[in-house]
Image 1 (cartoon, rainbow over the protein chains, first blue to last red):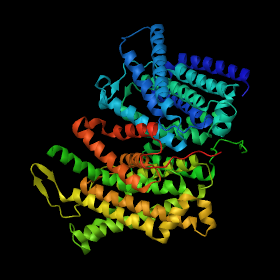
Image 2: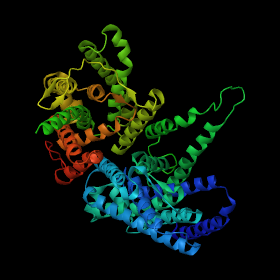
Image 3: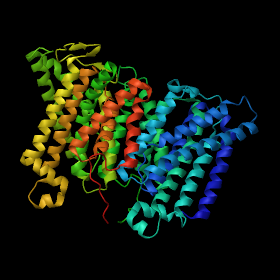
Image 4: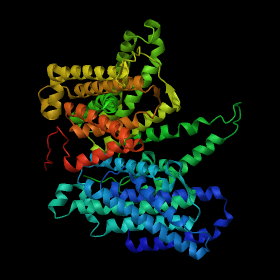
Length: 324
Length: 301
């Protein structure tokens, strides 16, 4: 992507999402909530794509970093009462940043010792760290433990979600397309050769991890102030897998594809829920004749993953095939 | 002291189950250099196979009885062995020439499919596993209380380990397995049918996982479709702890994780029990990535 072009797209999205936010009191809350989830998924998938797709480090603990950002930002904003728009957004900015930085710090703590490991070991260790974060949160009475934490303010809006999604996509694209960023791809393609060319592969991996975790922390903050209720189990292994599926479906290292996959996979469960909620079908006597659709959603999800790997391992939306 | 012995017996029973699962991970890793993520769910399938077979077997040998329990164990092992071969044939074999990550992702897909398919077919609510063995309240030795089931778990595991050791070291197929693990290309050139060996390995590993599932269900008689996730992950950690690819290592690792977890949840805090295995994993990978009994491998260019 041309970088000037990318900058104007970024500004365009920021402007549009600001406009949409001003209009959002006219929308009903359910479509807004889905829209927030789309923005959050884009941030999560695009940042995970930096780690999994561009740098080739398979991380299965992205939801853990999201949890760090969500809980910290929620604890911070819960200290404040009702504020006017300016103060609220000021506090929210600081809380999001704090959440992002804390997640980045967690990423650094995880990254430095573990990124010396090879692919599948790394996957399990990141999974383990995600689980450890979950267990720690479950045992922290200060944030409600297993009962969960209510978040007082619903400050997430379209400007924040889509603005930050655009920023994430922009930063990932700019980082990977820079001279420095070529190193990420070099580390993915052949670590030994990259090392021989003088690239410090550990440093690149840690950088990708910390940057990815930072954005996951931001997404966590947005999620906290959109659902307004957090439980440790909401950030488990399954949640991490959902983001991994987005990256794989979109094609690892293919940002437009990953963004598209994030949008589709966030809409898919909502669509299936609507199908399942259909009360009557002509010719069928039963009430809610399609309710089984909702129960089989995860089954189809996993089947999709298997079939995709067997038939199109490069991702559904990756049209240019990289020649090895 | 009695309290400690009590915890030790509980830990050994849990460790035996983890060891049986870990053996499957480590055998598959030794041969394909691949983490079969769905292995923990084969353990779950083993328990459910037992649950659904129990009424049929109960008609021949009324349960609980020793013969009935044994028949149940063996038939669940056979079913899961077939299932393991099936999974390998259709999900993993087509990808053998692809990058490792592709196979790992497929394995995650298979794992999720079994979990969600299980919830759809068996129902998500926990079910009660029937009593298949006569339970003797073995002892109240000076405050020590354990029953025959815990001893059964340990003894059956020990027997299975002996059988496995015999298969791997003394039979033709075992020799072929070791040859493929050592160097697949050279083994193929020497006339070893690699596909058969891989299928056999999956059958063996899945049968052990099914045995673990039944033994688990005897001791903790409430089973659900997600029961395989945590034991599966812990068994993987056990395999890494012992040195992945190394059979005695997997058994040792399983015992260590089982005992450590039981002791920590008994003496320190039970709420942290699920985090212990992962903490152990991170520590090993930091200080001895090749595991306790594993050989150090160097990446060659």
